[in-house]
Image 1 (cartoon, rainbow, N blue to C red):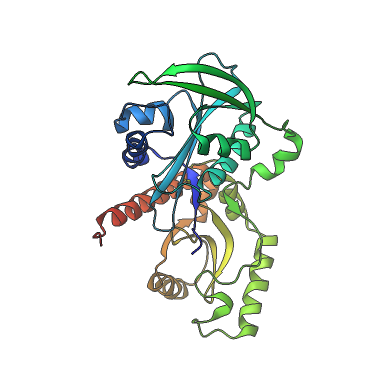
Image 2 (cartoon, helix red, strand yellow):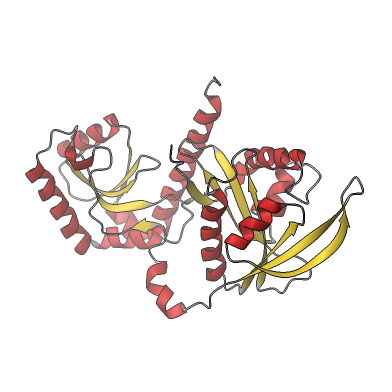
Length: 327
């Protein structure tokens, strides 16, 4: 069975679950130099969102269960443009591609921050950790011999370094606006591929997708302003598709992961709008409407409202997961 991984930036409300994850790793021993358990607040400051953290990403499965996290921060003695990395996977979840997926996000963010390299310090007896960082392209930098553990055992510390590619700022600039949004594309309807289950003919479906492509090529001013503003707010790693086809509807923005639809209100017929919203709600989508005039007046405020809604939906999702009875 293929593991579905979602990699996203860490959120403050992840601290408790990540503390449990890390403390289990520490208790198991042998893979981390950390030896004392963390309270959520201390973990948040040290590794998640504190002032010395460059970035931190988490990996979760399709049910929202946190499988691991990777943090990149400042470390005493390292140059300001060199980040120090640490990777932690849930006990029993190693060798599942979690670290590599996290590292892809970390290196992208590190390059965007202008860092030149990433440092990793691994216990000399942690064969799995040494192999992981070597696989990612880290090269040996040096060894600090005989660092004592809490019980007096002497264990070497192996230092490795990953050199980040030199940034081409000019080449990155156009793409940066699209980090949180998926523009274009010819995906089939979100819930039912090729219209199956929607009672939509192939010809009707083709017409819907052609109409959606035309709308993407010629967006209105409010939609373009909101799309731009959404790239400047925290979306928690979730993504939107613009002019998405869902059933027989073409919606302005759709986030499949959170089952969220954002519609910009204009001059549409009220009865038609109500009927379409009802059909989307019946298949599990939450529909949020924002007046075009509000977007044009303050697109950043509209985008922040959407960010707040996404955070609320993410919290609800996490809460439902933790309330499920264990089998």
